[in-house]
Image: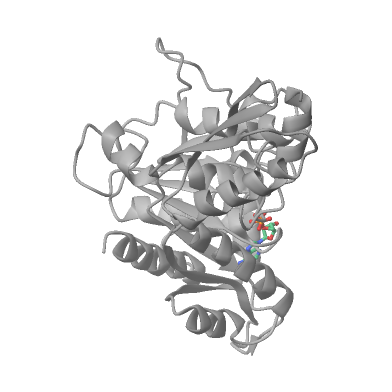
Length: 350
Ligand code: ADP
């Protein structure tokens, strides 16, 4: 029996609900082999008791099927992320995030790219700050960060004496993005466990200071980076961005079920690119009518807002001034973001 043999056997065990296995996720901490007897130590964070149960059973089965194996012992150290968070915050009131100083951490997610998740994250951050809150925005998309451009900044962040990265401030928002750490616009080629580690570091080693809200712009999809974030940070809720189109809705459902698996509350759905209104005031539902509304009903969560397709919104994003920085009386989209932000704030403090 070799450690390699045991590892490759354990890599058949998938994390429940995900296509990645427990070895790739870095959950297997130690393998001890004595003659034919094997002990495996696994550590994970979840509130769902079914996760360790399933992993335990599947590890026992996979290892038990190996030729010549003796006693198999699978030990799983399960930590509750909420208890961790409360501990980290010095036992303060429940609901405190695992990142000290931050009151609420909200993930913005979408099942697929191109639906306007980053546009919504940026504008939501700006609109929340308009209500008087202190807001940070972390672009967690290692492969396609866009926050820097949307906020019109290309500053390189500095580190403080504690070796923490000082976020860049733009339009009143504290920003952190992988793109700040890139010299040019070269794509980041990190995969699997390394990507996971980068993301963790990214979230923890930033001197955010005191914030009312930290918005996490998650990468599109439901892969291991998303899982890392939802596993390592005590999220206060997730917002799902979708267009009304059926193909986007199908993927949005996947994002919803990912959060459900790790017991993260879905605050609601934001329907982006809901319609286009021409100068004559006629609305065209380019991507279908009411998909987001129906989806929110189906999921039994609120529809937090509907954002139309708007040329100025795109122009503002490209010019580095999110539309929400414009006065609400001047832009109906800015107003829509402010109303949406108020609903998000209300839902997350409930
Ligand atoms: P994602 O983060 O989901 O990949 P982005 O936020 O980068 O999507 O948006 C994709 C493109 O669509 C960007 O060019 C953005 O400016 C544009 N866009 C997003 N939402 C709107 C909108 N409501 N009206 C007009 N353009 C939009």
